[in-house]
Amino acid sequence: MKDYVTPAPYVIFEEDGTIIAAGRQGISFITDRIAAGERILIAPVPLVESEVGATRFVDVAARVVRMKTPCPARLDGMMLHDLPLPCTIEISAPLNGLITHDEAEDTELSLSFDHPGTYAIRVTSPRHLPGNFTATKEG
Image (cartoon, rainbow, N blue to C red; front, side, top):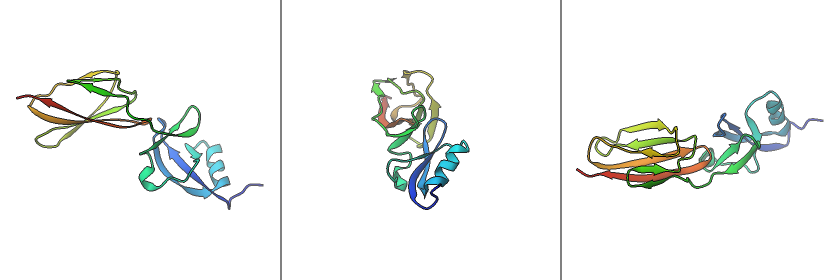
């Protein structure tokens, strides 16, 4: 007999494991959605709105919710090393605050800037907490 009454926490996730929504619903509603091919899983614990995607991700291969680990990327001078793949690199310009986004294609990236100043760099990845760095180009 299906149980549409007993609530269970769930997460909805993207193909890369990024959690995009969380909530509570009757267990059988969730299992019906899983059977229909939706990217939804019963979560081990209820997630509050601020945690959706911020602290956890779905390990798609294992079909389990996991905690994000610290970003392995590191900045050495003007070179980013150990970039997790896939990841996005956001760079905020010092003068106007414009942000550029680049998808990393390799685990290393050489940075270069046209204008002097200190640039804020953020590395985001579905499996890791954001990595935040600053790089300065001397004038």
